[in-house]
Image 1 (cartoon, rainbow, N blue to C red):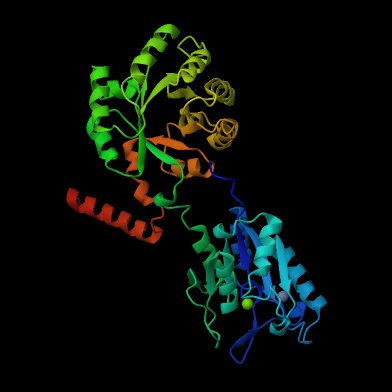
Image 2 (image 1 turned 180 degrees about the horizontal axis):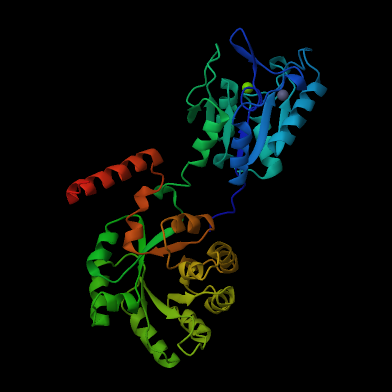
Length: 418
Ligand SMILES: [Mg+2]
Ligand SMILES: [Zn+2]
């Protein structure tokens, strides 16, 4: 299970990012009092957009003029308060030292960011630093954040390798907000292929991202399979080393048990899929417990409620590797948000480390990312969703261009004229 992740923040330099810097001799200086403060164009809207998307906004600012005797601390604080109020900032951290003080907070030292991260529970690796000078970018880099450099063309040393070079906070915010949540190779959730046609299953078996397989009688019927045992044997001969679920189909508990014992004998990588109830709504929890104690790897399926998760999890215990398949997609189809339900299911099952939660019936690729984010162990998806995995992290401008080209190509191929 993935550990709960911290909050994500955008660390903001103050002068030259939020408010205009006073530029003298090609170098930026802070405004000396509140009357001189001018918030830069697009900054209010950028802060609003970032806040709405869940980013904490934390200002980290060097104000060495205080140590140099050129500014009063009260004047700096008045400007900070004004910005907090106008922009809805979550926190401001200020270093009042100069180089000679050798403090750990004057950027490029990362102290201000590290302290704020500790106080707010911020995940630095998921966070950004935006600044207009090399010291800002370097502090962000040392703190383990990604960095955006607001290039204002000052006549001074430039930062090395910021992740993003922009000309305003507005532009930085767009870059941050459009950043993909993750790439396929970053996923912790295991992707299983849900299907029952042999060619499709073998195509997925060739993909190292696919860590296992699930089948069900509905899919098998759709694939035109009439001989259940024959089909299973054929598939297991080709896929001997990744978990595969095959489902019992009896409605009668003793017969379910007999089928389960036969199915488990087909191979060490076989998981026996048992629905959470029979068609009369009678719980299978007793049978599930009995099979788990007998060492049968199980995948308890058609689970929709947390009450069912609790009962099944309890019945499975920690005897053997097992799965609980919660139908997140069908839950979403009923107008309910599956995310908090899945997160709670993960929590319930964490008492039994050999149990893994399956996000079943996903509707779109984004569900893979969501399953990953709530710490779900497995997501079982149809091949059409799995084929889209390489799209994770695709550049949107490039994707837009691909889409325009597709429209054009199809219109030309169709020979349309107007
Ligand atoms: Mg600055
Ligand atoms: Zn300092």
